[in-house]
Image 1 (cartoon, rainbow, N blue to C red):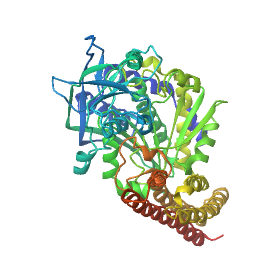
Image 2 (image 1 turned 135 degrees about the vertical axis):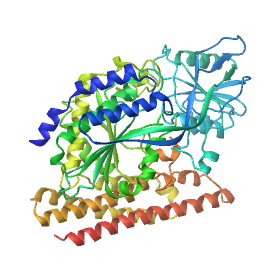
Image 3 (image 1 turned 60 degrees about the horizontal axis):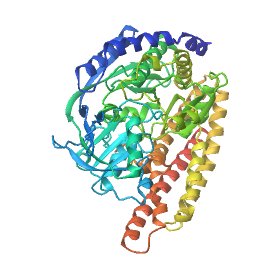
Image 4 (image 1 turned 45 degrees about the vertical axis):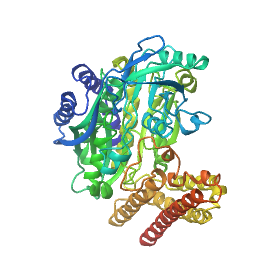
Length: 592
């Protein structure tokens, strides 16, 4: 069977050789630096060596950052504490800044309740929800003059973290440069030092001095794109699956982040190219850059500059970042947009050999620069157990993440083989299935569930009209899923079956273009939410502020927010009705 031969051909040993070469010969693959360019050339040359002739390096401008070790000390004792400047931190000059250190938990809005940090320096956990970029933005909004982020890991973890705090996604527009860049100095410290300062601060105020050292600015950076085209005779030869992962990194080997992901992409490209004569759709592999120090500038550039082709022909986006971390063999952390959920989980289950799966709705993180376009995304990485996460302050990517401790020994190569087999199975199915394996009933369920959660405050804006639109869409989605399933099962390769399959697939792509932005973005189709933006973490983020509306008294603030939310309700209704009409038109076109 073709699928079995593809799975059998995938090799973690071949991937391992790539990882070893990358880590040992191209450490610190910084965007805008010589090693960043060398990494782009390595990706291109590896693709060419495996017979993938369409492999190109694109040069593009991006705002990137080159942070250095920071100055950090306790003013009362003069004790120096090791620290790293976080990328895109603002500068202070040699004098630095001094202020009281105030612990604010994870640094989310709710963590500031009862605290006044005006003129002070916050100490926050590095763990996600929110990400570093959003922690910085919130701290500045709350009046803090600086931010210190202590690493995750066990309480004795001495690793000093690196990272970026640039909220602006991609290369900034004039408005983005004005409104979405960091506004306060930010540094990272080891967990062992952060916990000690937190404990001291609980007894008496602790004053600290900090001085970030960083160079921020525009630099030329490089992405590599390799393409495996389907045969020209294929009924859907122009369509493709997009596979992406960043090839830039912080200092050190950066084995898991993301040499391992790049090696997986090279191996997938090799195997798909060897079997390209059987592809119905092609594969495009994007080795992005300026992920670490430019906040997804490479993938955002590609989305902007390949917009029309991506809009019309990309069927899905597989993001590969930090696969097979050592110690993550208990659960499979599988995230996707809801239309891919059934496919995503069922294919993975065939290869997990009894390991569990933990599905979650895909959110805009990593190089997910394609939500505005409406390309459904999916990913799959190993996950630590709940107990392990509790013991390491939610170190979902390993205590070594974004530190020089991210070395080759942090990869599990038996587990990598499983990852690669699952990736290959996903990509093969998406590249060969006559009818795409998408289902929209799960989308309808998530939309309806979210609108039901908001129904009480929703009375203030007439949200019941959106709930009615969601009900209509749910009925249409069920009918469409059933028809698509029947067409897939009955497909016999005839002209009539081909015509029906292509119409169904076109409808699926167009449905995603409508529904993914609605479910996943605040700013809308053509822009990008800032990284980690709090509303974006919820389903239908344009309605995120509804609960706040219910807390306001009649007056100016209430009236302005209600106006905004009524308009956003209208966007939801229009999107759902457009999707419902598209389904109705398609079902009428293909008939019984």
